[in-house]
Length: 102
Image 1 (cartoon, rainbow, N blue to C red):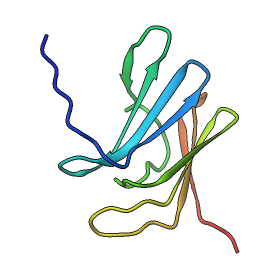
Image 2 (spheres, one colour):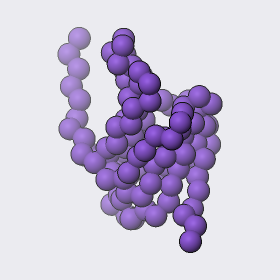
Image 3 (cartoon, rainbow, N blue to C red):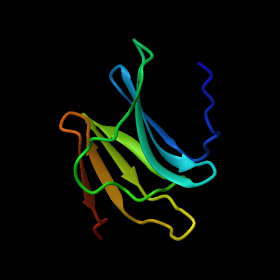
Image 4 (tube, rainbow, N blue to C red):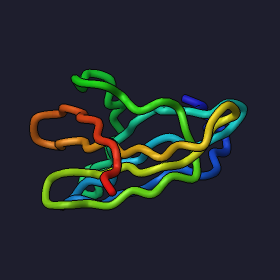
């Protein structure tokens, strides 16, 4: 099988245990695609069954791990600069959205 991947800029890569989570970025379009790579099996899986409000397509955002959660903050796309954050629970596979306070 011959697979070609598009070059993606501005994505985030977050490690939790044996898994690396890849979110968003910009190739020919801004994306909110979400993948997980298992570092032991090298399996790549598309995460397309998560629940809750999924972040808008974006690139150049920040992502950090907090326990079993990934927090995505900010970023931009062709229409907007974001000042929001989303939390993804890797156990329940649920997104939640929050607004910065202060």
